[in-house]
Structure formats: C-alpha cells, structure tokens
Length: 378
Image (cartoon, rainbow, N blue to C red; front, side, top):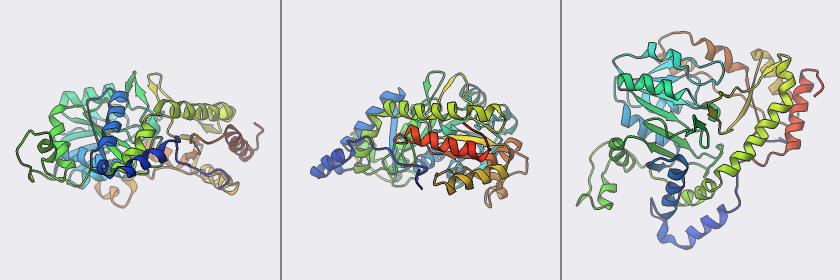
C-alpha cells in the first residue's frame, strides 16, 4: 500500500529507554522501575488510584471477568465489539446478553440496558468505540440501582473523556490496550484500572498466578501461597520501558490525531451534506481519543465497492466488526432478539488510515479518491 492503513506511533526515545533497561539487567524483574514509571504516568493522567499493567488488554479483561462474574451469571455487552470484550466472560461460564448500539456513537444503547437486566446480571461492559464515550452516567445509574459492576472496555479510549472525566476512570473496573494498533503502545500490552479498593487485593492475586505474592512483597504477610485462580498476567519490563515513552506523550499524540481527524471531516463534509456518507458523530459531553476515523456508506454494496476502489489505489482502508451475535459461537449464545442498529450499520462502515505520521497530503489524496468514487469533485 502506498498509504498503509496503520503505522505504529514512535515518539523517538523508545530505543534509548529500552537500551537503558538492557544495560542494567537488575531492573528487568517484573513490576520493576519502568512499570512503576508507567503506573505513575497513567495514574496521574487518569486521576486514578489503582493501576495494574498486564501483557495485553485481553489479560486485563480476563482479570476483570474474574472480579465480576462466575458460572451462570449474565453480562450485558454490545454485539458490535471485539471478541475478547465477551469471550473473557464466557470463558468463566457467564452468559452474554447482547445489547444493540446507538445510531450516533455506535456504542451500547443505554436506553435498552434496563430491559435486559435479570437477577443473574452481574456486569455491564461499556465499550468506548473509537474512543468516543458511552453514556456513562446512565449506565452507572442502572448498575448502581441493581448492584451490577460496570466494566469499561477502554481499549481504544486512552486520552478520551466524558464530562471532563477520563475514560477508564469512571467504571468499577477499566481495561486498556497498548497493542501496536492503538494510539499508545508497546507492541502488546494492557492495563487494569480499579475504582473499588475492595477489588484491588483480588485483582493482584489473579494477576500473580493466583498467589498472594504482592502482599508478601509489601510485607503484609509472612509467606505467600496459592489462594485463588489466576495466571501469569505481569508484563515484561522491556515492554514497560518502551511504553513509558509513549505515556509521556499522550497529549501531543492526541493533538496530532485530532488534527488529522478534523481534516478528514472538513474534506468529506460535502459528501455528507449530499447524503453519500455519514461522518462520525461526537456528543457534546464527549472528547474522543481520535483512535480511528470511519464513515458509513448508504449500503453494504457501496461500502464494498469503495473499499475495493481505495485498495486498488494503494490506500489501506478496511471495515470493522462482524457482530458477535451472528458469529458461529455468539449465535449459539444469543437469545434470538434482533439487534436492528447493529445489523443495519456494521456492513456499511469503512475505516480510513489515521496515525500521527500520516501527512496532510495523504489525507487529501484519500479524500480525492473517495470523491472520485462518487463521481464528484472535492
């Protein structure tokens, strides 16, 4: 591709910091100084107390699932999301109850959640699609009234906010991704943010292979042993050395991504005005992370043809999720309810390249090709 769909962000200081870690092997133990630096940076940015880093967002979601559900419990989730938003809960024997999404943000439709709650509902998963916030006040109100945990899937949302609150700091538990496709990354990594202090001790145990090792290290107990379920959810210190550089540049990276996002909107506005496409909608109380840029075509045939047109021109466009309730596994777990918005929108969505070293002239070229597809002049 002459314009690839994604290029991982490099801030410029990662190589030196990883080299510094290699020069002093004593720092390479798990939860070492670079992990502490990352924790300090993320805690300060989110204004959150408890941050635990993991090898992936999937690992963080697995811990979140262990903290909130068990066999026979139900978890309300959007169908329009990545598989691990759901599979981490079903792996523990919980049942997903798929909820439809909103027309505007493509996030879980909070107005439909209450009708899905039963006596077995233990968690609601709020996925901030594209780094645009779910309607968190209403979701938290529903959850509080029924003693249900709110899990923020903030994989795409670091640097986004809702009513001036950082995404990932609002729910009972939040999960971040630092995969190479995300705004801030270390190749592969994740983090768990815990709002409820009573969940922290359990999270540390799940993260440390089911042992109380962290309490032992802090001198709170005189020996550590196997006390609960868990796995090896502690990331490499080399990854944390790399990630620390990324977390030091959260705002500058966000500003660049916003500039590119806004350029797409300005360039493509005429096509939206003509009814050919629909651009992303950002609610007034939300400040996105600008993780991705998408547009909605009028139908799936138009989407597929435009996708082919752009790829033939060397432009790395793609689509997003196949609804989980229609997947081979999800269809067996779904209760058969139609999810009208999810089913109407998913095959009309087209994503365009968005990353910090994408140039303005690249966006201009991409937009010209989109106009050319519709037979219009920019």
